[in-house]
Length: 400
Image (cartoon, rainbow, N blue to C red):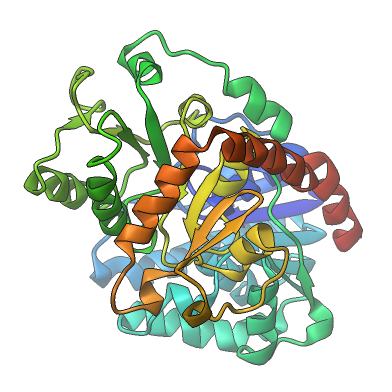
């Protein structure tokens, strides 16, 4: 048996890269998907799925052995199915794609700037960066989800410019709108009866939840009935809950307890269908330190949500400002008002974070009905260009 496309991904749940891999697995005929972790988001896909061994091995002593086993399995699958194209997402799968032999035309997707993802402080980070500099030049096609990522591949990783392409992340707008109407018939439905802002992000350093909590603490001094709803899991979740408690906030983790109406911060955990919670929010807020092109942002725009977010990537700038030029924040007041909401200076770029500016712009969006309605119309119109029905044609053109 020969397959047309082999897809390598960490898993099919959670983040933006995994979301794109899941769309590909469901949309591309005669495809096989290899997962590094057994996380499928309960989402049925058309691809034949393989899960690589060793997903539960975390001890560093066995990491090398696990990766060697995975590489052998990938090589066996490539030989058995003889794919015409092998597509991979994120650094681990990308490196495995290029280290293994064969697999036809080898295409790697870059979803974040590597210089942002890895600071080189960890041994395995340094190894990934070293391998990326050697191997990425060997890919037949390198796709960056933002123009800045494409530039990094050419200027810092020596990839031939003719092999680099920019292709924005897609979303399934029709499916998102349908799922946003769902109700759960449990305590989660109680969330829809409160006034809240929403954040959808795993609890990891990149997403900068500590900053978000600081902003919210100031915000509720004037917006006393405003709640904060957090969707996601991650190793820093317990830490963020403790910060909220230390600041005197009432928290409610619906993965552990029943709904509490007088809570201020709600932790909903990972939700296979996050869209009803986004749809019923007042606005979408993102405080990330870095991003590629956030799927969660595009999904919020699809549901007509005004945006407040950090200047965390060129992909975000391309959306909010229409270009990817670096901003001289010294000439700004810490925030830029756009057709879709506000973009604010990244906390990494300043010694004194402007919490007061964040409080002001969020309050403006909450209180200015006219501006919020204008944003709602504009984001819905913008996100049409990211619909899967349009971008899968670009996939076909590239892979042809």
